[in-house]
Image 1 (cartoon, helix red, strand yellow):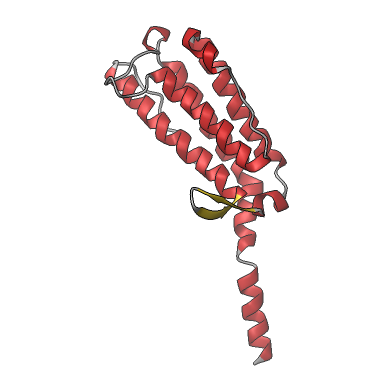
Image 2 (cartoon, one colour):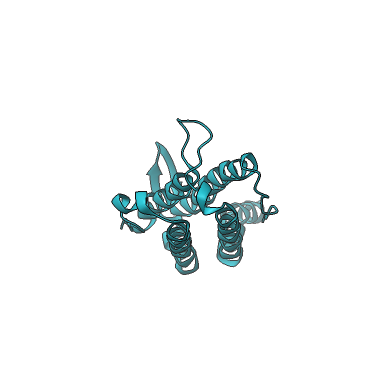
Amino acid sequence: MLFRWMVLLLLMTGTNLPAQEYFKTQYADVWQRNLNYSKAVAEAMPEAAYDFRPTDEAMSFQEQWLHVVDNISMLTSRITGDRKNFYRKEDATGFKKADVMDVLDRANAYVLDLIQNASDSLLLEAIEFGGVSMTKENIFYLLRDHQAHHRAQCLVYLRINGVPAPGYVGW
């Protein structure tokens, strides 16, 4: 009977191992595909339409991408304790498409570097975010979800403007 309990306890304590192993072996590649797809979507829109917004209340195409970058800045600060700014907000009104692409590239590369260099202890560190208890690893998934949400909006903006959308890139 003691043997059965020990086996059960061993199985229960090892359940986080596959998830941690997934993050360490695969998540950097997932993020790389995410950032490549975002870059393709941002690149597809002609520069003249970067200020397009479907309604007065909606963010423009450019604002969608800068919002993604701002979110990267905010969320990665929850991981590192240091808020990295990728551009000066007062400069954004004069941004060209190339400026937005550069800012997006640098922000996404920063996240990729954090992913590649995250220690197990950092990933497992518990934090509270939005009233929810989670690990810092969860913040990396939130970064991707948030970017996918706004990238999807940008895909709609492309289609409204008659711009062919890049093919879907998943896992």
